[in-house]
Amino acid sequence: MDVFYASHFGHTERIARTLARLISQSGVPARARDLAADYPSEAEISSQDPCVLISPIRYGVHLAPARRLLRRIAPLTPHKPLFLFSVNLTARKAGKTSSVGNAYLRNWIRATGARPLLAEAIAGKLEYPRYNILDRTMIRLIMTITGGPADGKSVIDYTPWTHVAELAAQIAEAAKALSDNVAHAGDDSCAPGGGGPAMRDEQQEAKRAALEKCRTQGEKAYDDMYEAHSFSAARAAYSDAKEFFYEAIKLADELGASDEAEALRKRLEHIKAVFRRQFSG
Ligand SMILES: Cc1cc2nc3c(=O)[nH]c(=O)nc-3n(C[C@H](O)[C@H](O)[C@H](O)COP(=O)(O)O)c2cc1C
Image (tube, rainbow, N blue to C red; front, side, top):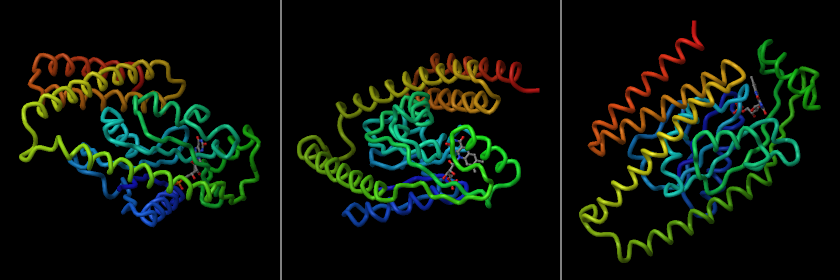
């Protein structure tokens, strides 16, 4: 199983590597993969293999390669089993680790329409000595507001490592149950040669459903762009909207729906023009 991660200062990488090691020890081979250096291929993304995706928060948004990957995977869930984790300092507080209680995770799921099998926020690490002057000032401000150490010197690992081990065990157990199910389903439905017409119909239907989902999520991201309270949030929503529309266009082309693909292209051009007009220059 792939444990995809993005990491700026290396703490999320440590969590990802720990998860991969413990999942492997539970009998499900797993490896940590850095999205910045080893981004998955199209075939890997669209396979129904389960995967873990984990990213830290930086100034309110998850790191770009993780956002990019979730935009692609989200329409494929829950058929593609996903275990999703957000690493942030807010999660050090009680009630802020669930997909309901943690706003970063909640918004990420809502913005992409992902349906992960498991989603949690994990408390990250505070490391003042590694921050540049601007980052240090900002984190001190955030810590002052949220009642954390604002001394500009502290190094505190808030990650609940025992819980990380529990998560690894849960993931391994779920992955085993899924592969048992697939093995049983294969007993009667896995035709040699890539499946017959029924399978092709099913794939077409799945693509059509994914297209609709991408279109809906693209429109939602476009709405979010308008409602954003900061430029970076507007830019993140714009980038989400573009990715959803690119994906919808690709799916429409694959389905041979050329009129629909053309309409989606026009809509995307409109969104780009609005962003350029309202938010840049
Ligand atoms: C510049 C910067 C901005 C951050 N912004 C946020 C934030 O908006 N909200 C939050 O809860 N945590 C924030 N964090 C905390 C990180 O998510 C946390 O330190 C995490 O462990 C970093 O993971 P990494 O080492 O993999 O990059 C920020 C950290 C840094 C350095």
